[in-house]
Each structure stands twice: as structure tokens, then as C-alpha cells.
Length: 249
Image 1 (tube, rainbow, N blue to C red):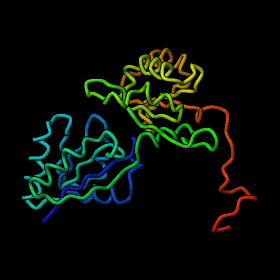
Image 2: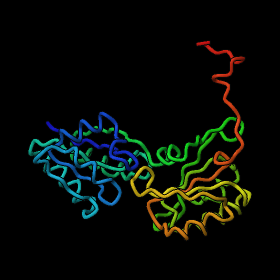
Image 3: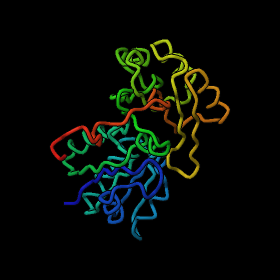
Image 4: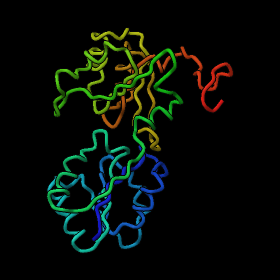
């Protein structure tokens, strides 16, 4: 029996897909891709005759029905989603439906936009003696966020933070972070469509990042990055320190 293959694309650039994801995509008989978020250039990897559906025009049950009908017809299906679909990827609800209908599936992770964004800036979220933890979160919008996970409460840790799906409220985000404990001069960056051809980078501090983002007209498809890892302070790791011994040296 054929399967449904959940495949995470890269953060944007068509070559930032894993080799396994690429092979599944080029061999698929049916591809259902997240059209509002996935770079359509990835569809160039599909073979001739592949059926392609844009899930931006479909609701959940339409997507699931399409998968089920295709598998029953003996077709290999790829559900092409954004980067790492384990983060705000709505994959759980699709997998639960696969289980209900006894449809076999596989999952192939991709490269998340939060990794693509850091790479484009040439930064590392975990800088020795600066920050060793990363908080990935979002601000409450149409989808609620538990009270215990408010931006203000997370800000008390003053660690590295990546905020998804919130750039449309960047002014409120900055205000909440400052109210929670980050100094106003904490470095901040907003990356619009990281690794895409039309990527935009905006850097500043929590004091001015909102104004800079508004000047650029960025209202969606962007990440907010906050923390001292973006600043000038850094320390070398112990891993390659000649005076630091470990099992290999």
C-alpha cells in the first residue's frame, strides 16, 4: 500500500530541503503543498504528470480526503509543508486523521525558518556565558496562547527568543518584552522570508525595532528575534579551547 509522506521543505530557498525530502518529492504521484508559505520553486522537482494541489484553497477535511483517495488509488502522496513542521505546522491534526483512517504515513523534517534566519544573520542562539537557552513562542492572536506562556512571563528569563506569527503586532511584542524584564536596549531583529529571494532584514533594539519594521512595511511571514546573542558580547566556547580536555582530545 502506498503512503502519505509529510515533508518539511526548507525555510524558503528551494535547495534548502533535505535529500530525503527531495527524493520523496521527485517520486511523488500527488503533492499537496502549503501554497501560502512554501516556495513554489520546489514544485520544479516534481515529475511530469504529478498531481499538484494548493492547500491554501482547501480546508482540513478536503486535504485529508484528497490524501485518502490518492492512497487508495495506489498513488504516493507528499504533503509538502514549511521547514520544520513540528513548529506551528498543524501536523498533529493531520496525523490523527491518518490514524483514524488507517493510512500509513512517514514524516521527514525540514529546515526551520528560525534556523534559516539565524544563518542569514550569521548568529548563534546559544553564545557561551551570554545565553544557553532558546524560547520559541508566539503572541496571542486569533489562536489563543495559555496564560502561563505569555511573552511577559518568558521575558523574565532574558534568554534568546524567537517569536513566530507575531510581526503584525511587533509594537505590542516589544512592549510586553520590556514590561517582562528585557532592557529597552536589548538587541532585536526581524527577518522577513528568511532565505527567499525577497528576504528583508531589520535590526535594532526593543526600543526602535517596531518603528523600523513599520518603515519596511513588514506585516507577515517574518520572525522576531530578541536577545543578547544578537549583540557584540561573545565568548569562545570551551570545545576547541586548547586547555580544555575531553574524550577526543
